[in-house]
Length: 147
Image (tube, rainbow, N blue to C red):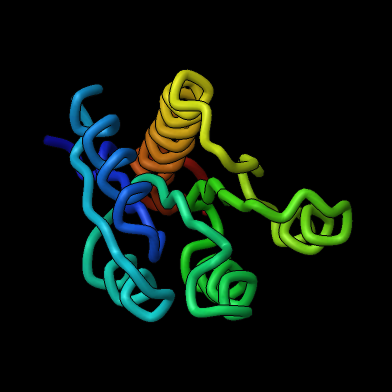
C-alpha cells in the first residue's frame, strides 16, 4: 500500500482512536495511531504518512505546539485537527498554522471520510506534481541547449 495512503490518528481517547482507526482501515487506508504528541512527531519522522488526524486534547496544552512542530518538519503534510473546544479563539489559534481542516467533536464519521479522501487526493496530486517537475528538470548542458 502506498505510504501516501497512510493515516496517523493522534488522540488520547482510546474509544475515539479505535473508532477512527476502524473507519480509516475499512476505507482501505493504512492506519497507525499515537496517544501523545511526541509519539506523533516520532511517527511522522520515521514513517512517510500522508495525513495526520490530531486531537488537540493530547498532552494537555501541547496539542497546538505539536501542530506547530508538525507543520515545521513536514510543511505540506495535511493536518486535520479535532477539537471539543468550540471557542473562536481555539479555532483561530490552530488555523493560523495552516491546518487542512478543523473538525469539532463529536466527530461526524461521514464528514471525516470526505475530508480524508480530499486530503489524501490533494496530497498525492501535489507529490506527483513535484516528482514530475523534478524529472522534467535537467541541467542546461543535458538538454542540448545553450548554457
